[in-house]
Length: 107
Image (cartoon, rainbow, N blue to C red; front, top):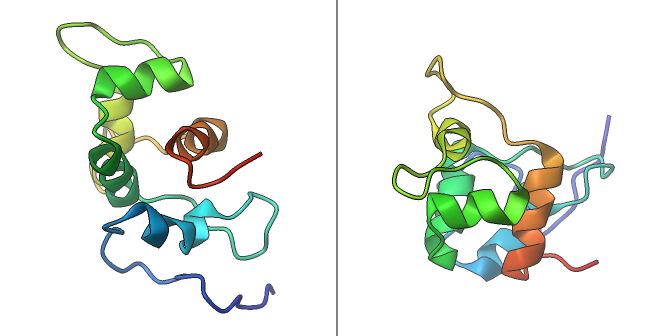
């Protein structure tokens, strides 16, 4: 069992309202960290909103398909509520790229 790291929000509270708040989330930790937790659709949507990205912007950043007029069905699935049938988890590599592009994490 992993130990709790002070300063990291491991609860499923409301999505963060600032980039600084994202830095303190368990979803911003490296995948190998015992306290890492995959991002929720709400966290993904909050990051996209904070950065002012469109679905197409996100799709271009992480290398998934998009339609210039309709957006990205892949990004829509990542943002869909977990209980929806069309929900898909965002791959960790795509999530890390978004965190890097937003300046939340660094290499």
